Image: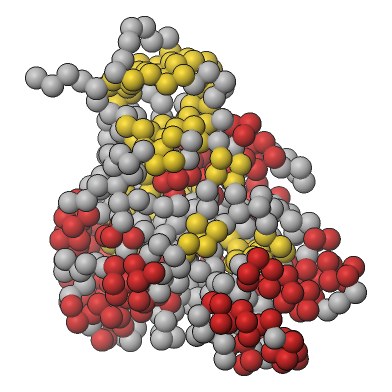
Length: 570
């Protein structure tokens, strides 16, 4: 009989995920589960001195898009490098299963467009050793990771799998289509998917400009799929929607939850053009949860923001003819051109004509330098427009010259959502709402213009310790939000707490010295693909299933992470 493996964490400041006050104590782990919490006597195979350090549950990130990355990489970066021990993929209705060979190009174009994962990366990286969703799970189950992964079946691949070109063209689903989608969704959940996800936002387009196949899907279709999950009594629902008509859209979602009995979570954002609309969404949410329905809104830890650079997908000069003429050049050749005074003058002489693009990408009043350490709650006086005014040059000139620095890798930060008041007070209000959970990190996606896998780390550093422009949030509550609460939202009730019997996913953190570095650009994807990554100082150790996976930010090479099949309980 094999001797149980044991690990004792000694003398740490334990923040156990319940929201209760931190206390000093030990934790004993036996065979990947927490055995004792408090005063632990005796010895173990391994001991870690955590005196003066925080000991917390590992973070559970329920909104990521590592669906492709986990088929070619054992490292779920950047999340696994930032204290996250469980990720949930398959959000926003997209993914790669089910998918027959004739539909692979459609799904890759959709992922390329919606999540900014280059087509060449997907072409080389995806092994496509599956067709059905259970086969996709089997492919993931055959691999090992540095953290645990879980996934959902996306509406887009499901719709195209069942309806083919009709589904891609967003034609209404027939009764037999809905019945088949409901059956396959239920089979996926029975095989281990956590649930079903969909997208209803006009912003989600494939790389060839086509709207996501699920945009405008009828209530009958969504309800039919949800009722498929009701039949088996399993699975969650997740969606993103524009809420163009808040009352009508939420009423539909409420009916679906009432009829199916399945829990639902949705994306919550403050939009610049309708800054108070989110409050109406939450008013409906409160009414629904008061009536006993299981619904949560996912909100961010900071603004959902775009990152601009001459070395990335976007910059304030994107779509201008003279700039676009250079976009396919290798980086060094493009930089040589961009340093040419004549090219600079030509680009600066051009203007954006598409008003929405100009507002989003070339809005110098809400565009900021992003350095190291990064400032994610910048002040209005630090905008490029303000800096340029003080320097006596135009904002466009100031931006151009700044982006030339650091060999064209200098970055600009454009808070797109949750920053209408030019501070994060609105996000504090969201985070403190009884019906929200932290989410929306989009880890594994937007490789060239978003880097938000660090949301869980920022939740701690900014909101519990560093914030100077408004109220903070107690550390114990923040830990609960990012561990127990997120885990419970998707039915992972075996983790997120430091209590006997729970999964031993743990962070040991030097909280005073926990600091995020600025995003960096690496070229470690298949086909030499580019991605934004981010690291942090202060994580002394991250433990997954009782095994140390990271020490002082460096991977140990251990891969205890596995695919999670379905909801979990003790």
